[in-house]
Every structure is written in C-alpha cells, then in structure tokens.
Length: 428
Ligand code: CTP
Image (cartoon, rainbow, N blue to C red; front, side, top):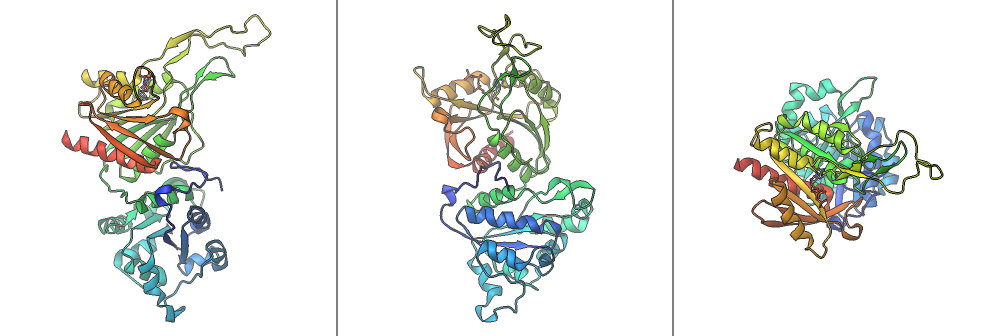
C-alpha cells in the first residue's frame, strides 16, 4: 500500500500520539473487509496496539489468521470465547479508541439498537472511549431512511460516523458508499484520538477550497512552479466534508493524495485557470479558503515548441507578466456585491522572515493588504512545511489578533482553522 494521506506519509509516527494507545478495530462483513488489513498496519506502524474484533460474517472475507498475524493479538468474534477473560467487557473497557471499518448497514443498525449479541457490539456498548465508524455499502443502502436514521442516532450519541467515499462499488456501479482509503481512516481516527471531534457544524454549507501549486508554462516541457504539496488544502477539504459541508476542491499540482470523501475535485494547472474556476463558483459559496500557492508571475510568452539550448531560441532570460491576485479579486467582488457579503474568505501566507520584518510582521501586513477575514500563516523557512505531514503557525484576524496554531497533523491544523471559520460564520 502506498502510504499517502492528507495528514502525512509515509506512515508518520505522530508525536501528538507518540504514546502507544490501545485501538480496537472492528470489522464487519463486507467486501471492503480486506482493506482492514491496511488499517491494522497504519495503526501499528505508528506504534499503537491493535486488537481486531471481526463479526462472524467478516471472517467470510478475511480469515482470523490474517488479522492475528498482522496485529499480533488473538482474534475472536463471540462472547463465549475465552469466557474466563471476560472479553465481552474487558476489550471495550481497556480501549482508548474503537474504529469500525468497514461498518455495514446491518452493523450500524445493531449499534443504533444497542445490541450486544457478539463481541464487537458488546465491546461498543461497554466502551467509553471515542468510537469512529467508517461505513461501506451500496449507495441505495447508504441513502435508505433506515440507515440515515441509524447514522443520526449514532452521531447524536457522540459516535463519529465518517462520510463514505464516492467511487467504484463492489459491482460495476459507482456512487457514495465506498470505504475511504485506509490511510484516510487511520488519519481521521487519530484526529479523534488527539481530542478533535468532527461535529456536523458545516452541514448545508458550501465550501470552496484551493490546494497545491500552480504551474506557469515556459514551453511544452518546462514550467515555473513551487514546492506546495497540497496536503494542507486536501486536509481542509477532508475535515470540512466530514463536518457536513458540500466541498469543492480546486487542486493544482499536488502530491498523490486520496480524494477527500464526498468532495468534488477540479484539476487546474495555471493561476489563470484557477482564477477562471473560482470566478464561476464564488457567488454560490458560504466559505472560500485559498490554501493554494498561486504563482505571482507567469512567462509573458509560452513558447509553442520546446526551447533548445543550442538554437537561436535559447532563452537568456524569461520575461514575466503579473498574474491576477485571485484573493484580492474575491474581496473586491464581495465589496461590489458579486459575492455574498456574508461569504467568509480565508487566505494563507507562507512566509519567511527577512530584514523588513519577522514572519508574523509580514503576515499581519498581508491580512491588512488583502482584506480577508482570516489568514493562516506558516513559517516556511528551511523547508519547514512543504510536503511534511505536520504543520503549525498562526491564525490572524483583520484586527491584528494572533492565535498560535500548535504543531499537529495537517488534519489537526485544518480542524482548528475550521473552528475559527465556524465562529466567524456564527458571528455574521
Ligand atoms: N493568492 C492569490 N493570487 C495570487 C497570489 C496569491 O489568490 N496571484 C492568494 C494565496 O492563495 C494565498 C494568499 O493570496 O491565500 C497569499 O499568498 P502569498 O503568495 O503569500 O501573497 P502575495 O500577495 O503573493 O505576497 P508575497 O508573495 O509578496 O508574499
């Protein structure tokens, strides 16, 4: 498995979760049960211990021996196995986190009803730790009113029920109901373990997020670009979608990252392509987050054929033309009524300190110049952020107040940033 995730790869040992925690991985009986093997690996590679508790039907898809070998722990499904160890109580009592992936419609119905007729459901009834459920089923089942009601009941009780991914299902059909990528499940579960919840407080909100770097073509082969990996923007899209938002993600050049569950992804290359995609969507958004690293300049002329170093066309210098400032354009559009006045607009600032000021000095000047509602500032000196699994920085508001964002996974940083956005939205 390629360990790519919005929060980091390859399989980073999160310092926030450096302490080894006891994770129960419940596995229900669906074809996606095979992906649970990668989830066990994702947790154990980060130093956590995993006790796999499959349902009886899950063992039709993956044998107990596989789970035992991968986890190094005994695997049982029923409450009458090893009765002297009182497993049906002890497994849930000792857990720091319960993750169920995949969770079938039937398992969620049993959880919602409070059943305890096998080891997994008994464990969930006993557990007082966070519980994360990753559903996988056909779209019809996911959309059925019975399942919707069960999801609502579980969320109401504090269970984190993840949004499924959209894509190819077991048969030839596609739709909502696919199990998210194992690395996404691991990263989102660890977010819960780090004390960050995924409340449905962005439900019904339309959120537009840009991510990654732009590329400005010099000729058909070469371009001007930057080091942005897109991880922070993808993490924002992931958390926003899991918090109920309708997310559009406009992505430039990024690392290979799984698509945030439920998000619509639009690929662009240059700053002007990005500007065009934003232009036709901005008027319908409640929240716009400009996490993309947009090139300020492009070559004035893009050569139609490859420039040859030996020919007369060999460049001695590249003449540049300034790109549109998309964020400034959005603020102007809001002022002029082309974007609703209550749309929250967030900017990013990747800064390094220099003779004219510190990282924070530059960021405070930037939010005043740009006029956005919130600015996330990172210190990117000496490769501190690009392509990394973790991030830190400051959230700055137009009045110049600064809130430190402590070191955390990019999902944790996204979660904090979205808390601030929700607060701004509530104050409007
Ligand atoms: N941005 C934009 N359009 C551009 C350049 C940047 O919309 N042409 C956005 C970025 O997406 C980011 C914010 O503006 O949210 C700040 O980007 P940054 O490159 O730090 O700001 P600049 O105004 O280009 O300032 P400088 O490069 O001089 O620091």
